[in-house]
Amino acid sequence: MAHWFHRNLFKATVPENFDLKMVALDTEALKICGDLKQCRKRLLELIPDANHSCETIDTVFNSYLSIVQGFLKSFDGDNRASKMRHSLVFKWTHTLLGNKPYAEQDFLYEVANMTMNVGIWFMKHASTIAGKDDITMDEAKEVHTSLRKAAGAFQLATQNMIPELVSHPEPGMDLDPRVAGAYLAQCTAEAQEVTVARAIELKHNASLIAALANETAKLFLDAENLLNTLNVKIVGQWKTYMQLKAAFYTACAYMYCGENCLILEKGGDAIRACQESQKYYDKAMALCKEYAKMKGPAKLAKPEQHLFFRKLQPVIQRTLEKCERENGFIYHQKVPYDPPLLELKATYGLVKPEAVAMPEPSPLWNPASYAAFDTAMAAARDPKSKGKSEGELPEVKEAKVHQSGSDPKNESGCVLQ
Image (tube, rainbow, N blue to C red):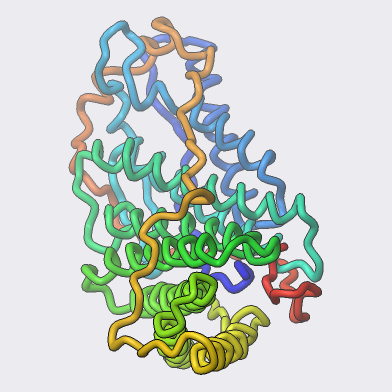
């Protein structure tokens, strides 16, 4: 079910040599600059290929976070920002703002953007695994874990980095709290899709599936609501994807709500819930057609072509017919004007981001290595300076990944089992 993903492009950046002036020759300080340059370069080489393992990305990203810490905070005994924090200008593109790089003279701007890029990698890795012809239980768990790790990366950027930036992010930047928040809500919702798929495959009770599907729809709506406040033309494609996913899972929730109402001998409510399910399914299908016509920063997904999407409609129809038949023969209840209320909270199965914490600083950082950097040079830089103008950067060239075109071999039609 989580096969049909909307994935935005990776962020592009300008190479950085970390040629920082020093007041004293210090081998550890020199090694810090060399290691950070190589670690950043290696991470940027790995990210365009979603076929790498999570462990590979985790290892290099943690090394990067470990070595960069002395440029974020002081190592001279004071609990304050590093004297080098504004010593270099970093340039990054942003998902919704095209190929123009935006520059900031701030190491935290650099780290926040890299963290967002790693989060996007975990989302793309999840869709790569989910796109296999037949995925195993372990691979389904990896999809779930990868999406939770993506959420953890976005959460780290949103809560710990973006609020501390000197310059407020321009509207539509990936570091705009609305964009970062939309990423966080989206990958949390997509991880929960795996939970819904699993609950359906294991034939859990209808009330639990309805509640999980409803919670999933709400997360997609949270992402859409954040994007709604952006006055950026290209956001329409991404926003429509959130809308169609929310409509689909609301349809799913009402269908299982109807099934549960019938179990509880509420024939009228069961019929009304299934009618509401059909309404939301029709809305999702209309949004799929609208989405297919839109231009944006991602390759278009085709949800209406996937088996789970196609299979829900006849299931809704069969469930509605069953409810009408049993209500006509047994319960003789009036069909209410309003649909029954959906469960607001699932009893279990709700997804939380997998926390991504800053690692311990590299052992290369100590008072001596920190003191070796030229404080006068660092202090002379203007933290509001954007540096020289830069032309548009080429899009990050992503490695090819296999995406299955065959239907899954299971009962429900869910891609993940």
